[in-house]
Image (cartoon, rainbow, N blue to C red; front, side):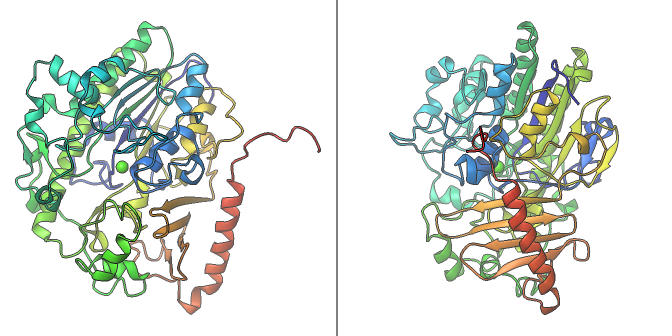
Length: 513
Ligand SMILES: [Ca+2]
């Protein structure tokens, strides 16, 4: 699978549940992602290296797990001296571009760790007019930081709106400071979930349009391209432009649910999470700086509100799908489809009521760890394929470099998935998802094998062991079950070996001594 003139197009969404592809879920309409599935291979067992934004996004850039690249949790920064996939490709003559969400840097910086993804920079459009890259190896950058109508709007997206004559864009977004208490309370209960921002001015349209523009820039420069088209949705807040906001009827939605008693065998924080404002949970959640991000509204969730959230979430996905169609059509029109490796995935999953949970963060169920993952490369990757080979997003940089005919640097992690993508069999025996959420709390690692899932916690003897074959809904934690202690021991050994085998090597051994 080597081609030195190969284009690489990585399309990602943010926080997309794996079961949101129309080809397998008749409730949702995603004709363009379905097309990608029919022309490529869909992987049903792909996992994130971390279930939050910055750590996984930094992994996609570096080919390193979060514990190695250093952006180990939200609110950290990926340091800019680290080698990246686009940087390596750029050195080989590639045009490298990023359009859409970055979140490589935090909303606050300091002298030692400056950030440009923060205020006042975000709304300083003169800054972004000058700032086009290089940034993390991308020659060309067009980025924006908000989700939905958050006040973090700005960057190249705001410039684009102004160039379209949409001068009063700020009226459609929150104030640039932190969300008000009222707003925070309503983060997942926005009603109505319709946004009066016209959809042609929405950042999803911007991402699609500018992805095609960067492809054309690469063509004009007569270079192969590596472009990361990074869509912001369907990350909450749940609000989207029409017609997408009304596309799905909340009454037709079937959110996940809580099975009474299901958390009795789970570590304590599972029970606390579904009990609204349980004092132990909130004490734990707030013990470390930054607390738990993204899971602050568990439990006591109104099912009708959840259905509305889900209808909006589906609308966001279908809107993105339309823009993905624009990108795929542009590849066709430019005669690039045959020479472009396209991967679609997301940074991590999302809860829509499953196990009594919403959003993300610290509960390592399949809803959160497993991601949609499609690979299209005509003539190389089987069309219409469905594969259960294990994948981890950390594998993408190494596999992209391999596909481009480049030797990966010695220090990167991940496995070259080329044989698996070509339908020649699995190359990964197990996948690890790290989650070092706070300094001292909610530090866990999950091992996933073809059949089992094991989660160990750094500060607790409690853990999780699920048989994904016998118990696909993960309702019966076997961690303390006396009949499964041999299996647990074997999986703990496999976890240790998997970690050791995937340790990065920082430099070659030059001689015997
Ligand atoms: Ca994310």
